[in-house]
Length: 268
Image (cartoon, rainbow, N blue to C red; front, side, top):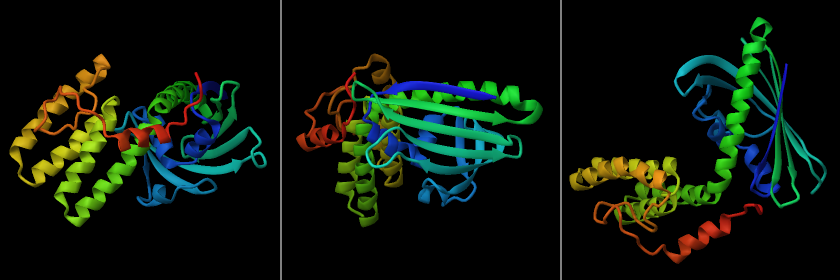
């Protein structure tokens, strides 16, 4: 049985094509409906199309649903031609065929026409797996559209988190907090990354027995969803306990420029 779904993603096709070839994208757009755990812990670190990867499936992030093989291959048009396609000819002990094709092509407005086509076969369970696939690919495409709005910010967050980890290794406390504050500034409009920034601050404060900071971070974790619901987080706020959780602060120009530089959304 087959499932076919298409959507528009407000990103340039080159960016979408680059993202679909990463393990991070696979995990992000499946969450929280499905969580993928590599059977080999290092496998996703070297993930690339053309490889074979065994993963453990967790429905809703927790319920075990066996293991599955991801078997990928690229089917690119020559040079700058489109469309470009990626195939996952996957299977498991339960699902004998999970033949999934992703097609990426530009649309007339500078964005991307993105399609998922999958053929599933699982014996007597096929109708149930097909019904799940309908929901799963609807969910994935919805997550993709949301990611398009935050991708530039997430790229900057990733760079700042890498700098934060380097500062931790170097034992430079000032730089540790500097980079976490920058992560917080960028992440505020996006609840998941926003909560993660406070989680990192909380962990650092607890490790260093900075109890006033611990209390401040716990309060901010409780308040974070409020900004997401209202859509009006305090711009430029560093997220530290020495600053009011509602204070607006000018965003550093270099940080604003970094987000703008990574923003490659297509026109609406």
